[in-house]
Length: 332
Image 1 (cartoon, one colour):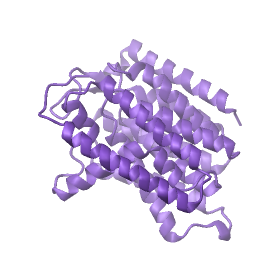
Image 2 (cartoon, one colour):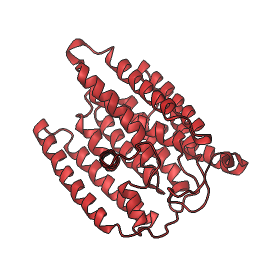
Image 3 (cartoon, one colour):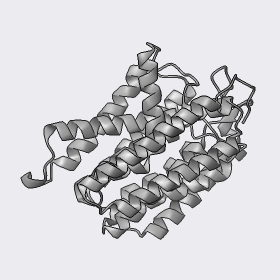
């Protein structure tokens, strides 16, 4: 067992070391994100930041006691390998989704089996958890398209989970979440506008999986209500989910790269990556702060909080649609 401080320090140092080594050795040039008509960047950028984050976080996960943490580490490693292969040469969608679904099913199953009958979720609840984890796995990747955005969400979102887990006495959850949060901060030193590296699928996919899975494990452990992780990560959840619904309504291909997300619309409408990142961080901090302050509230209060934030997001999405005017050139 480690402490949150030791976990965070280890993860951050390894993250910085791995990214620096990849950049200096020239190995980063083997995984390059080339600009195209769907990109928001103007120059080739290495997609190796996620390798540093995973390298720092994975040992921390495996150091924690319990078979849930062991299998969590195995699943994170598997997703990182599959996603790295996708970064190097695009894999079929079916292969990627199969990996996401398999790892989500494993974590739902391994967390449920040891629970006493009185604490078992319903079949519908377990299925919903599996779908939620798989969706979080994908949406974090969908939202990783602007400098500082996904890294900032990792710092704030996992930081909130670490805080709540620590106060609930869930040491393993706290250690892992703290490691991810501070590794995200280390990654930001390379990714804050203008970015020198991107996360790549090898980073964004495991991060999304960890967000969904740690949220689920915390609910089962009684560390927080089900709405807590949803509100913490709501800036990403809302943008990705609303965009998916709109694209489905328009009968557009759901897994084809695009620039329809609301954060992309702000960049195309003239915002800089720096302005977008700082604004998103403020929104994320407000959502996470609300979740932390109200996590012990009653179920009725939780519903009211979610409803209030839903109204805020509806207003923000409306404002973003009004901001969008034309498509001026925007580089990272």
